[in-house]
Length: 220
Ligand code: C5P
Image 1 (cartoon, rainbow, N blue to C red):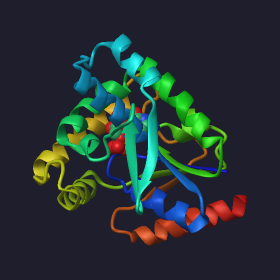
Image 2 (cartoon, helix red, strand yellow):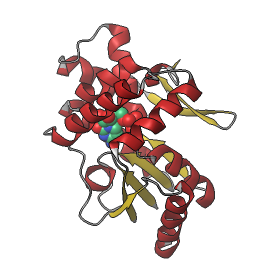
Image 3 (cartoon, rainbow, N blue to C red):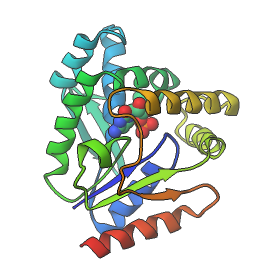
Image 4 (cartoon, rainbow, N blue to C red):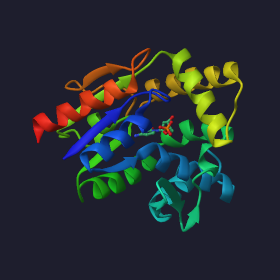
């Protein structure tokens, strides 16, 4: 089974995806981490963000792998652990142009389908219900107000010790990324026609988690 969770940055997708996967004994795939890993490798190698061929080469030929360090998920690209390096403000800025590159998307969507088809997965991203797994058994479009998302991202950055902790800076970045992600030509952020809409503003995240588990049990 595939449970697709799409939505803008900071809506709570990662928290919800991890909790749902734990409750249902599914695996979890964070597709945003894959775009971030490509952005990180581009910076590492000095590939410009408008160099489509260079970005495609990274997405096709640098394997991205997920691992575990205790309870935490880790991300590596071409064997280099980039778990915290992909969460910096620099990568926040670089990732939208990288993910707007159609050739990068084709390469990563191939990998995402290969991973997801190997088992039961909660897959989170922007285009999972629309493009990557249009036949997903459960599709959720999770949103929250930009202000709430900015507050959450600041708290997350404080906890992780990476990224900006200035609310206005984080809010401006969220609004800018929403705009690029929603208006790009290649697989823009939008809900699938058959997605269940959930808004996590001012609601307990546990309620969202329980609703998604209930939807999955109905399909199972
Ligand atoms: O989810 P996260 O904020 O880590 O995603 C980082 C960026 O990756 C997003 O702003 C978006 O540009 C891109 N992305 C995407 N498609 C996905 C997942 C993420 O374009 N399925």
